[in-house]
Image: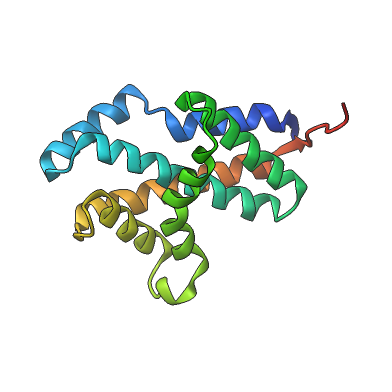
Length: 169
């Protein structure tokens, strides 16, 4: 059985939606959780976007390897994300990089992941949602969401034949 051929632009669009758009069920559950944990809903929602972006980014790199195809997918995802956010300013890329940096540092630094990557990412998520105050429930949520999205995106990218972006004009 051969893999379905899909365009980088199409996959990037779907991944951007996975990063930015909560389902109604997710939103209800997370709103309730934010109330229960005493965490600001807007902050939790915002931080989830960056957690999800980090999971998608890691899945792309591990599934596709560093190279032009991965670069095209990552850039396509960021371009679509920028359109979804309604932002056209140059600082948007820098903002994404700044907000996802703590997750990237945990992923790339073996000293910070003496336990599981899931736990380390969850701890960073918890700190980002609470001004540095550790919260075990938020850490569990963040780690579980990161791991689940990473796994789904990785499996998707392994299962499809990604068509490179045609750079010829």
